[in-house]
Image 1 (cartoon, helix red, strand yellow):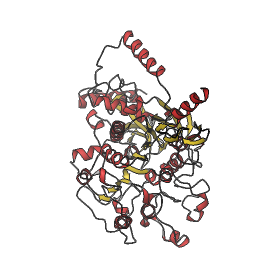
Image 2 (cartoon, rainbow, N blue to C red):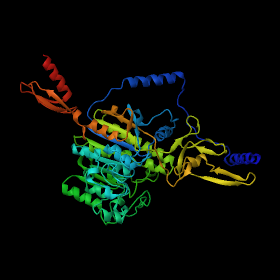
Image 3 (cartoon, one colour):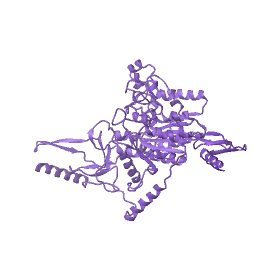
Image 4 (cartoon, helix red, strand yellow):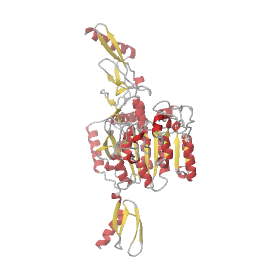
Length: 571
């Protein structure tokens, strides 16, 4: 035991000599004195805001769903701190834009057949209102994963994007991933395997068993509701064009379950031809410059593919000066196009690369992507009104990242936390499993056993963009987490999100708020006119009623007409 203690002491001495100190971490300072008056006033002000919250029971003309892929609750906490520290504040006292929404709840994320879910089964749940199986999209749980012969018309389920289209609204999808990836695909596709993004990913035997089987990219271009989406923005060009090639800073994607077309098709050309034949105003773009040139007041359909695979991380767009839009810029363009007609719209915006960074245990990138989505949400709030626009922010699933180590207040969230009992530093953010597993076993001759040694991490290394956080169990790709995730809501009927919900509830609540989909009974009200006749009006919308004297009362909300009728009956 004495030799073991000596070994540890020598190891700690080595760290001190090499690093100059056993532990150095950057710390951001608080901006004000936090005495008892501060905390009492803070709580009283929050209480006043809570007491002043009123339910918004308007009909949601527009619905925007922001989906942070893999945006677990620890991710939210860490991103909040990271956002503040980018502005030289401590971070803990701040908040993300959507954390100021008045209404929130939690979502249970499990798939029908999995305790810890994937993004396909969860996407189907919160977009179609029906939970399903792991790695399947657009079918109920009677589907069998990777079995095309269990795909039938009667077990298909359709998303809120189609419900919006059926109600005469515009619809759109914006993502930082491939537009054929699990989350965006859940708005329009029906597949037994989420990886069937292009025909190159479908096995020959599957095509023999199911000759009519279409890959996800073809479904987006050829089938409803994909072909009727007014806005499609993201990555994944190589899934649409068999002749896609490498471009500067945009190579063909050979990872992330990517594929390349084998059928020789150019589906972008097919989309352009189809829109031309329909006589609608449309445009296809591939760069930020081209997107900026789009006249949003004079276009009905926009198709934008900015990269061959997934879009670059936000920090790469900036550091490399790429001609690629941010998530906020894409969101702004989408809202401008979708809101240029009067019937309203449904828009899905996915911050998809939060998830990818987590899978690689790149916590710094994950937090940066979460803040980028927060910026997109702030942009949406500025472009819409809470009187007629419901904005919902949630995640599809969690990840295994944790926040630990008793770091001091204001300590850099992406940096070191403290020293372990082995005398080596560890970071505040770590993972339960993943590629960050990094341990060395040294044989201890004196004790006849082994010593386990970790990597001696420096603050400089830990805060880099490419640093992989430590993980307890080795895995090539870190897994999802099975935690509940948060739901934040603002606008009409936002109070419907208020407790612990099954994830499929989200689609039903959004549809209820917008008076689309199956449950529309509450959208109708019966009003007695001054002529003694009853008319059916749509709640929250404008109606026109002729009075007994023949005059017309126009452009008044149905609820106002009901009040006027009640007053007339009393007199």
